[in-house]
Length: 264
Picture 1 (tube, helix red, strand yellow):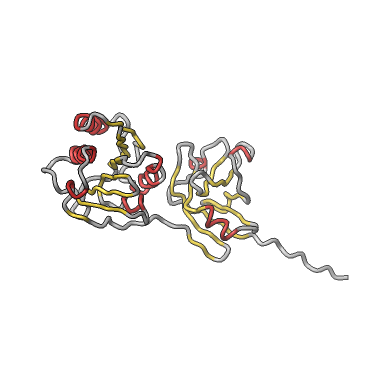
Picture 2 (picture 1 turned 180 degrees about the vertical axis):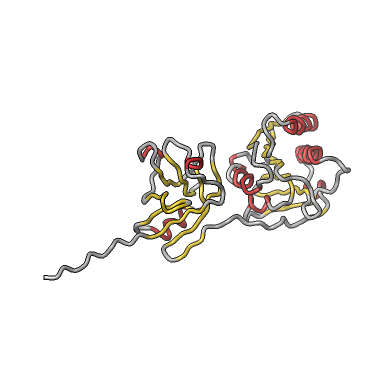
């Protein structure tokens, strides 16, 4: 049984959920529809791309991923069908495909082989045609390059990494764009201080689990995505420290002071 996932900026009780699911069930009844993520902040393709990039490979190959985030077609933003890594993606060329796939090899076509229908009908029809075994060239007549838009990367200076918060999870934990590899490339065997948003909020070590520090204490850890995460054990760090996407995180080397020579 083939799977279709939905990543949307709609509330779970929004009418659009029922409309697109109803259309999909009518056009291709033998499918499984999964809400990969809903209630993405409106128009926030950075948030949506982070979710899709880190989830789509968990689904079986051949899965169709419908993306309804900032998805209205505009003069310079066509609706596209993209195939990459054995998966299919249907959405709008607003930069999200490049953010999801990064350097992944892909095929992409502009969806231009349908009558003038609304966006939800269009996406459902494309998914149904894929289910029927149609090729990309039969669905879109025009091969295209996806629009380029790249995620923010952490910067490295001498003994300093400057990154930013790119995602806040359901518990208020703040995920940064600093990878484990980058961190240890700079700070392996060195003393360091990790500060977030302000020099007042800092820690000097990495832990494995939230419970490795007392309740209420700030901590830093690498999550399952190998990204540096800032949290407070038992509390919502984003609320307490007013963190959001774009908040700055800075890691710097702390050189131990040299003891002065004693005069005898």
